[in-house]
Length: 399
Image 1 (cartoon, one colour):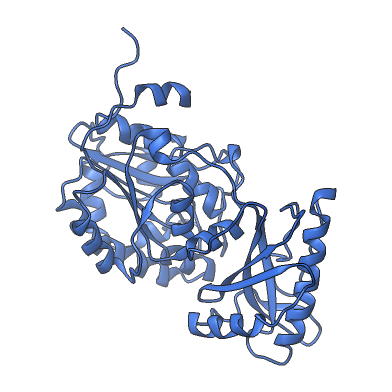
Image 2: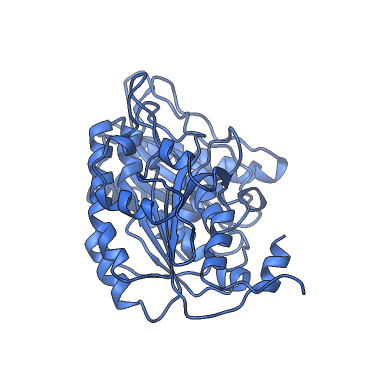
C-alpha cells in the first residue's frame, strides 16, 4: 500500500500541522468517573472538535502497548513493526550525538537504590538536568579496554550511553525491571551477536555503581533500549513532505531526525514553539509540534497535574488556529493513564480539521466523545494519509 501512496504523491504549498499531546489518553480514577482529558476545562480543544472529524487511533494494534518511538512512527505514517528503533538511538540523536554505523546506544535512567540493592525510584526523584549533567561528567572516568564510551545528559534523570568498538550488536536485554522493590536486571545477549555488547554493558554498570556509591538520590543506573542506527526512508522520500520538528524534549528531536526532519533548537516551552512556528511557516509544509508533560504527569500518577497540563495545551490551541493550517491534527502517541502510572494499550483520541472535512457532531475532545466520531477506531498510520488527502497532496488513483 505504501508503494501506491508514494506513486500518488503530488507536492504543493499546503500546510499540515500535527500536534502531539504526549500520553493524552487516560482512564477514570474510580468507576463512573471521567478521564483526565474529560475532566480538563478545554474550550479551545472542544471548539476545534466541533469543526473536525474525530475518532480513536491504535498506534500499533489491539491490545499492544506502544513505546514512545513506535507511537510516533505510526503518527508519521510508518508501520512501527517494520522498523526497530531503540530508545538509545532516539536519545542519542535527540541531543545531536553523531552516532556511527556499528555504535550501540542505550537510554540511561539515573535511579535510586536501597541498602539491599532494590530499586526504590526508577527516576531518582526526577533529578534536574543540571544534576544529570554533573553525574555524566563523573561517569566519564569509566574505562573499558578497546571500547570508546560516551555518556551524555539528555534531560532531567535521563542520559544516554554510547559504546563504540568492533563487532557490537544491539541484541541486549534492558536492565530496567520497570518496577520498584526489586533489583535491576543484568544485561544479557539475546543472540550470539549481542554477547560482546552485553559484556561491555555489564562492565560499564559495575564501574558506574562504584562511582555512584553513597550518593543520593541518584546512586544507580537503569539501561533501556540498546540500539544501533537504523535505516529509515525520510518523510520527503516517503510522502513528499518538507517537515520541521518544533520540540522541547530531546528524545522527540531524535525521532524527527531519524525521519529527515529539520529541528528547531533551544525551544523551552509552548510559547517558544508558537513563535518558531510563525517564524518558519513559509519554509516548510509539515510541522510536528510536541508537548511532553501530559505523559510525565501520567507516569507519576498525578491526575490533577495531568489535567493542568492538558489545560496548558488548550490555551495554546488559538496560536495554531490563527495560522490557518490547511490541515490540523491533534492527538497523542499513546495513552498514559494516571491510574496505571504507565503507557497503556487504550486507543488514543484524535481530531482532524480542514476545509474539506465533514464535521461529525462531536462537541468535546475526549476519549468517549471521539469514540462516537466519524472514524471510530483506525490504525494510527492512517492519520498521515488523511492529512495528505485533505491537503490535496495525493493524486487520484486510477482512471
